[in-house]
Picture (cartoon, rainbow, N blue to C red):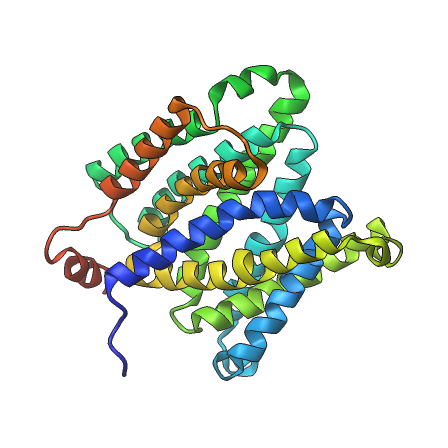
Length: 310
C-alpha cells in the first residue's frame, strides 16, 4: 500500500484547482457565445465522464457489488455536483449580475460545507476556522469590487441571488456526500459515475436548445474553450478536489473555493485586459490570509485530524 501524498502536494493540487476554476468564467463566456449552456453542460460532463472512465477503468465501481446506500450516494453526488449546481448557476445568471455569481456561491459554500461536515462527518470547526472564513468573505467581496453590487436591484436580482445561494448549498452537500461515497468507491470512480448521472439528467433538458441545429455552427474558439472546461476545469479539478476532500476533509478543502473569484479576476486581467485596483489586490491578500488561517499547519496537526476522523 502506497503512503499518502505529502500535505504540501495536496494543498498544491487544491491551489491549482482554484486557478483552473478561476479560468472557467472566461472559458464559459467563450463557450456560450455559440453553444447553449445546457448543451455545453452535457458535452462538458459527458466528455469528462468518458475521459475518466478511459483513464481509470479499473477503479470504476462495480454497481452490482455496491450496497444500496453507496449507489444512492453516487446518484446524489451526480445530481448535486453535475446537474443541480449547473442548472442553478446558469439560471441565476439570467437574473443577477455575474459579479454576484462570483461572490455568493464561492463564499457561502465553504460555510455550508463546514457546518454540514461538522454535523454529518464529525469534523470540528475551530475558532481559527471561523476567523479564516470571515477574512475570506471580506477579501472576496473586495476582489469582485463591491460597487458593482450597487448597480443591481429589484426582485429579479434577488431571485438570482437566491439561486446562487442554493447553488452554494448544493455544492456544499456535494462535497460532504462525495467524502462519504469515497469511503467505498475511489475518487475517480465517484467522479465518473457522478458525472454520468449529471449528464443523463441534463441531456433531456438540452433538447429544448435544439443542439443539432446549433453545434454545427459553433465557433472554433467555443470548442477550444469547451476543451479547457473538460480537461482543466472538470477532469483534473474535480479529481484533485475529491482527493483533497478525502485527505484533509471537506471543510478545509472547501475554504479554498474562496480563491476561485480571486484567480478569476486575475485571469480576466491577464486574458481580457481588465484592470486591478488596489482594493482588489488587498482583497486577494485577505482571501489568501483567510485560507491560511483556516488550515492547521502546526506539527502533528495532520496526525490529530486522522485520529479524529478514525
